[in-house]
Image 1 (tube, helix red, strand yellow):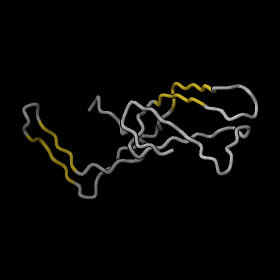
Image 2 (cartoon, one colour):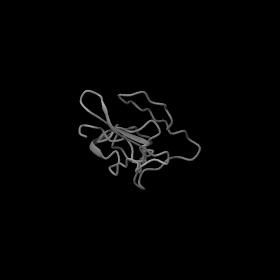
Image 3 (cartoon, helix red, strand yellow):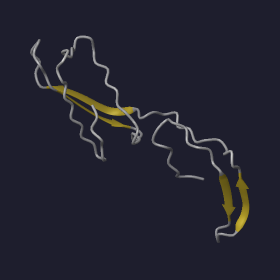
Image 4 (cartoon, one colour):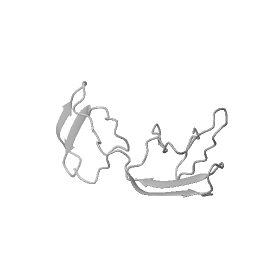
Length: 113
């Protein structure tokens, strides 16, 4: 079998529950059924980032700033996926102040920063 896309996340799929082998004219040659399921599909490559950039509005020290981060992952993020940003210790988030985040994607997105 060729040209079949892997799952969009690293979570294993459910196992195959049946396998049907047909002729080019759709005549049944063989059929395998296993209610327990055969091996799941596993994708070990996470949504690795291939292109990224960081832009900050100001380079002045000790002021509030806005950062724009753009990136493109190799694999699409699944609907239940998440993005984790780890920032250096020099950046501080003030206690009790809401840090706002705006996300733009090329797919539907449930905003939750």
